[in-house]
Length: 254
Ligand SMILES: NC(=O)c1ccc[n+]([C@@H]2O[C@H](COP(=O)([O-])OP(=O)(O)OC[C@H]3O[C@@H](n4cnc5c(N)ncnc54)[C@H](OP(=O)(O)O)[C@@H]3O)[C@@H](O)[C@H]2O)c1
Image (tube, rainbow, N blue to C red; front, side):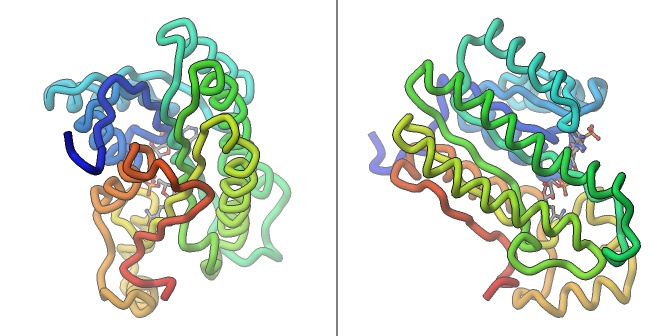
């Protein structure tokens, strides 16, 4: 028996945005530590590839399609989850969108709605569904993947940054409300990480130099460098931790 328990044996975990990038890395790690992982995104074929990788590594994964901006699909996802497993122990709200790069004065209502639907409304109702299911089986743990930009807004990514700040607030509000149901809610704040999401930024020399100039460790991260913090937060190692944010950002928020 170890003094600190990171094992997820017997747990059912759901990770959104698990088809690539940070979500894929988180899903791989949760599976490696024993959880059966439900992989969610909009594209079944890509999710199946991730599920194959997890199974080849000895884990168990189930791909399920769900668009985070569509409430009917979120309802169907939880119906399927309940029918199939009867429980949910871990939810990682990782999927997000950032459809607009530019000043806020030039953004239209469609951009505002799309960003808020996927980055805020989706996670809000995912947690509402998850918490009802978790309450029936004694509790659980939730991690919202926000961003350093939820604390320090990124230039030309104002609306995205606003949604990420909202997600931090949502984390604390739900943590307060759900503590008595034995459900912990925390947030991960990734810094600049090499994924499709950040590809435009990483491939532009001027923007990259500007971004790296704000990071004391003077480099960007790989997706796997985000997974350890999520493992900690969802495991019993963090049994007294709720409503907090862990930044994995190379020191950007110092
Ligand atoms: N990369 C960074 O530098 C960075 C920094 C700070 C925070 N983050 C945050 O980290 C999280 C993951 O980002 P990433 O960099 O790994 O991005 P990514 O590589 O672009 O992956 C995004 C994931 O979200 C899924 N997704 C997008 N829209 C969706 C929707 N409407 N419904 C369901 N799934 C959707 C995508 O899958 P499909 O296309 O298959 O649907 C994909 O699996 C995001 O919350 C992001 O804000 C990233």
